[in-house]
Amino acid sequence: MPRERRRFFRRILNSTQGRPRRAAPTVRTVAPDKVNIMKPVVLSIAGLDPSGGAGIVADIKTIAALGCFPAAAITSITFQNTTGVFGAEHQTAASLRAQVEPIVHDLHVAAAKTGMLPTVEIVAEVARLFAEENLPAPVVDPVVVATSGDVLIDEDALEILKTRLFPLARVVTPNIPEAEKLTGISIQNESDMRRAAEAIQLLGARAVLIKGGHRHIDAQALDVLLTENGIFTEFRTDYIEVGEVHGSGCTLSAALAACLGKELNLEEAVSAAKKYVTDAIRNATRLGHGALPL
Image 1 (cartoon, one colour):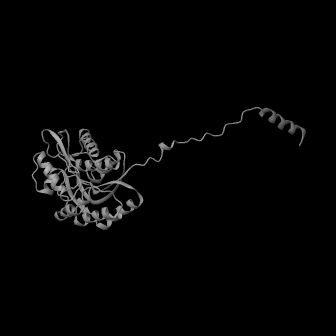
Image 2: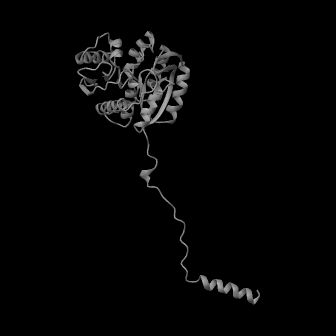
Image 3: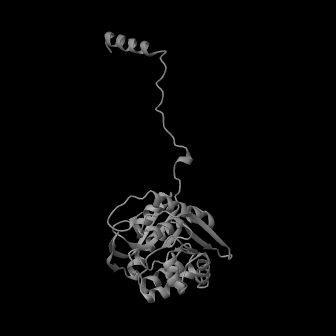
């Protein structure tokens, strides 16, 4: 190597001696409690309201808002908005099962709820799915009539709902018109609500929640819960006068399922769900030309 080149390398070597070495790149780590936080999966089996106020869209909004992960299977595609229901295309038992089975085989479902189950075929398939698959006892919202007055289930399907699905339910959540339809009891006061809850429990439901928002008593929205131990609990809030509300029943049953998925006991879950719906009604934005959507 020529003398000049040797001198050049010697100067470089001398100039770097004594310098601190460059630190290795810092690798950021995330604390274990900040990642992989499991959200409870809550499955809704219900109809689709394309306008978003009720049905599966309302369920998904509610389940996500309460910190759970929503999954859904559609029983019927309805044609509706806040003013009414203009028709529907119901799913087959095969198409419903084809939606549910991949969910069950991949995800651990912590809680489930049912909504609009319009036909005998659909109700029977839902009952089979809950009996055969690894699904928790559902919150059964017996959707009979829409806020607009449109009938959403046929009479034969309603009978199958009572005889085959109610006995599989964790809790059944009819509003007052639905409870009257299910029991034949005219509900005018709290005592009537209790009698209706007992009659529905005799159909096989472990617990029954009669939702009183459709007929406020003493200026209050009164819900009455009958537990599997035969204990009644009242849930009262001030009645918020906003006229007809679109999707309150779907929202409450979805909130109840989400709270059960978060491992609240039934009384705690009902209380939290009722508060969620009350706040949603109080803060709802007026959209459309019909009932107030949540």
